[in-house]
Length: 324
Image (cartoon, rainbow, N blue to C red; front, top):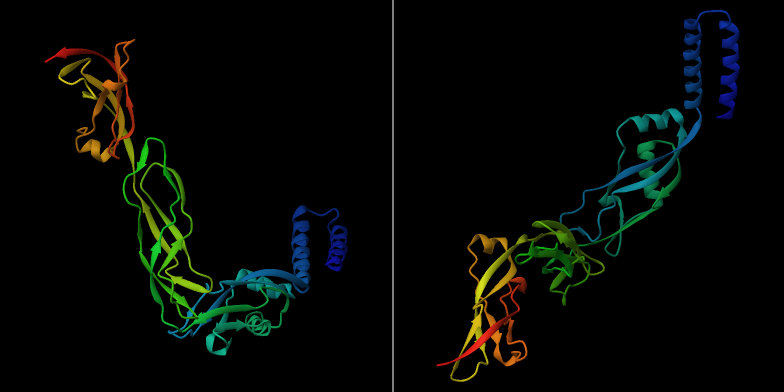
């Protein structure tokens, strides 16, 4: 390349001598001619260029299932005349094609050696010199055994809704079974788990494509499942709930002031739209009354799971004992 630059400098000096005192148009014509001359010389030099070449495996028998993903590409460094590499760079990306019947297949494994890869490369790039090849060979396990149908299990430990939202139903996924392939018999495997699903602060129903984690040396088809996480907002509701007395004095009536407690809670939007009718109770526990303040504390019994973050806005009431 240094020789070409020196020739270009000499050519430019000749041009400047020729156009000295002439018009700019003449100068530009000679400049274009010089550039073309330099380009022709450069294209005739040996240069190196990197290619990412797609790989295609043809004529795979229908009873053969690859146990890993088919190799998609090879990284090549090619040395050739600049004119040849420009042709490859400007044309469609070449593809390395391997015929299953021409490949070494031993012990349930397809092996594409460096020599076979070089032969395929020469079929595409002619006599270009291969300076680097990554990976330098390919080895793909396969099986002719029939698959086993196994169930899919979700790993949803890291799934949560945003504040004032909730996961409003069962997390579903499709498909719920997949085909598991192996070169050895599959006996003690009935299910396959997904990768851990990480989805936090969800504010709307979400669908996620999640990969499966097959046992080592096996392949699941399909390799992913679609997981649907139902999410809906929580609506803040306030109600006045009649207070019921527990542990009251026998034969006596306890009158409370007020007789109702104000309660706030969050409820899923679908229940709110259907018409919220509280089914929980508020209890005044007479056994925990304070004789000093004359007040009786209020508590919730166990609440149904559809009520979230319940809060007693009235935490205690005054009371009066009446004889029946």
